[in-house]
Amino acid sequence: MENFILIFTAITLMIGTSTITYISLRHVWRRLPNIAYPRTRAMTAVMSVFTVHFINIFLYATAFYGLTHIMAKESLLSFADYYYFASTTYAAMGTGNTAPILSELRLLTAFEAINGIVLIIASVGFIHAVTKRLFLDKRCRCTRW
Image (cartoon, one colour):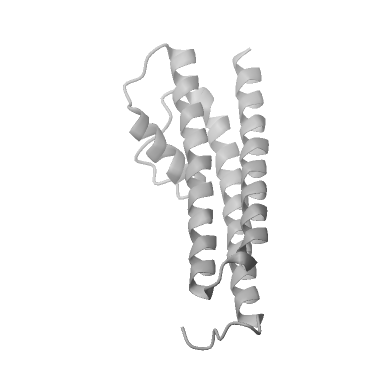
């Protein structure tokens, strides 16, 4: 039963975070032409990417925290520790100084690392597209920033 819960949680988080990222960045992409200044457009794109990744990491940290409390009934770590672990896993850095208390959570960790790398690559592509759009826009003089 625990494996089913972990797999269900991992798949739900992958679908959920991918959907959140796609909808958010699509919304920002559609609203960018309404912003008057090119630098403001670029900063809006970058800050929206940071915000989306912050939300995604928060969702994974909440899942780690909740599953640890459900399966182990108690935890020695605070939510900040889970957030730190989720952020290093999401960025696929895997510093190794923290690890999930339960060995069952390794599956969720692997899913998070794969999902995080894919979403970070998509975000880099989004920022590249925004920058390219700014430099190709004839209305703005982006040659001197």
